[in-house]
Image (cartoon, rainbow over all chains, first blue to last red; front, side, top):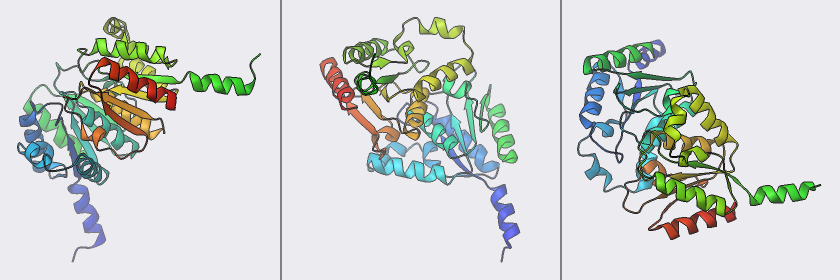
Length: 152
Length: 152
């Protein structure tokens, strides 16, 4: 039987992450979301919003009401230890989720391609819980994710 | 000299509106944002974020830091009686602003073209302060805006 100390330690090592990426804003970076999902799992994190990286997502969500999708996403968000958002593809939902996380005191890491035009709501945001970083390549993306997860 | 009652009445008649639309997410609906701006002024509202409808905006913002843009936008948002967002073009900033407004108890009206794929964070959001409406044409867009302003 695990002691309370051991449980706290294992929770710390396996933080729950809300991975946020564009869905209806466009799925052109789906492959990147899948890479981030894998990097997070490799780093020992538990990705609660695995559906963001699911190529079959549209089929699943077609059978859900808008209210059910909202309730699923916010329900997972509030259970998360941190939110990691890929913000290269503009997305109203991702922007909404970043704000919701910050309001609840959940740390947010925003990642983007260096040539993308990123919102000033992200780049100019003074909230100490928000970090925004450009990744020039996949190796760098993975390293930023690992470093963030370790520091949680 | 205006009495307190008269001032309260005139403030009610000229609500301060934060108009929210895509900037770095793409300016393809700039003409619609300008139409909304004019409709709001015609309805007696004061549009605090007139820059969203400014075709020269990029030039102005090139001379500002990200922190200055963020501070300007959030500063205007918190002074507003309502936020009206055009959400047809996905925008991380617009999503962020919608959440910020709702958190502060500011009513939000989201407007969109009927054929657009709109985020479930908007369409499935149960917050009673949030209203989302499709507009099939400009006449309808103007009428929805007038009705919303009158009901404030």
